[in-house]
Amino acid sequence: MPRLPDQPPPWPHAPTHLLDASGIYFVTASTHLKQHFFRDPARLEVLHRGLLTVTQEFGWQLEAWAVFSNHYHFVAKTPPNVQNAESLPRMIRALHGPLARWINKLDQTPERRVWHNYWDALLTHRTSYFARLNYTHNNAVKHGLVKVAREYPWCSAR
Image (spheres, rainbow, N blue to C red):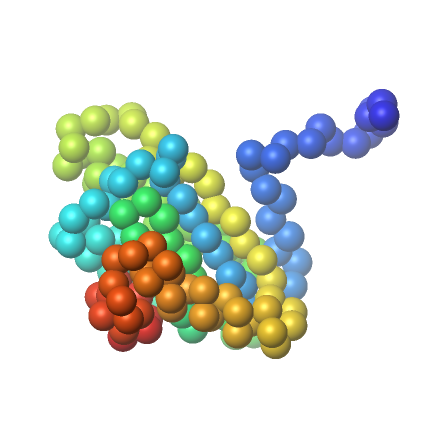
């Protein structure tokens, strides 16, 4: 089917972020090519602390989170007294930019691409919300890192 001239081309590698509503969002971000840049406890701690700090600075209320060597997830409520989630892209850039520079300096690989992309979803149904909370809390178990979610130190299940 031919594309109409005024339609943007489909671009599956850069998801559209529909940030026109306030509420609770589920966010997932991945490293470039799923590389394990945050592969040891010290690096995971920096990623973990960075996520907690940047969400607080931007006024997002975290409800669940988990960070791993090559991705992270979080469920968070938009800042109070706002009509949308416009600050989400800025918040992600405020996290990813410094982390990429830090990890590249540590590995002596300037200009290396660290982050691939992030995906967000506004959670509008109770069942969706609880499913994403459960998914986030139990992701370390799913990946075989721990037997019980609360044993994983870089997530909110503790």
